[in-house]
Length: 292
Image 1 (tube, one colour):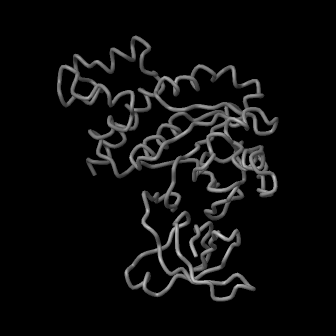
Image 2 (cartoon, helix red, strand yellow):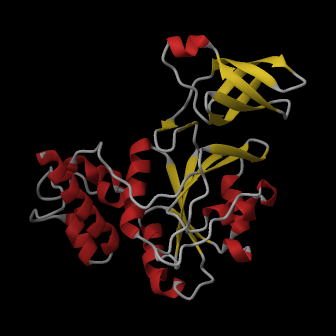
């Protein structure tokens, strides 16, 4: 029987099977011998050992079309990265680091700005809109007031989507708005540090309707990009990548070189200054890392 791994805990894999039931499975020894580890999101074939108690074995892992390391998940169609427009205020440097990591993994990303009902939205409205100019799909929601949730649901249809974002931005509240009966826990925001007490402890796919899965992941407050060389970074900013080879210097990194078309585009407002400043900051971080 075919199915999809929706959760893995302590060597047990929970498979949502084509008969609509969820089976607790172990992976056969052949996978350990070949050093193949099943991942949440894997499409698998299972052998049912005990139909009454929903027990089985994973007999085969079907080919993956992609996989992520953080979170460890396979066959992802897209990521929805959620940031609040207020409480906590958006950290655009962290957002850009996440976008770079998804560009590197070749996973489409939708940027979702939550809490647009709060007064702080006006302060960051222009900055948020700049990501649309950078080529990303951006949606605006208020999960607590059911604003924009229908548009988000449309984006999820027929896909496996990873939800990610910093603590306190409302990932669990958004999940509850999409599928209330999941009973996702919502962490309170700490008054001292203004971030959520994250309640997601393991990666788990939730089937919200046929062929449509979402994964909530633990919140993060930092993200290190350590597998890219500084001179490769420009390829992971789509609006900068289009200028590759067009500047005065063919190998221009768009930092301090004369005749740089990217810097001219920033001055003209054609490229977001926020994005460019974050590009320069990350470039310098990577360059310093290479020295060591």
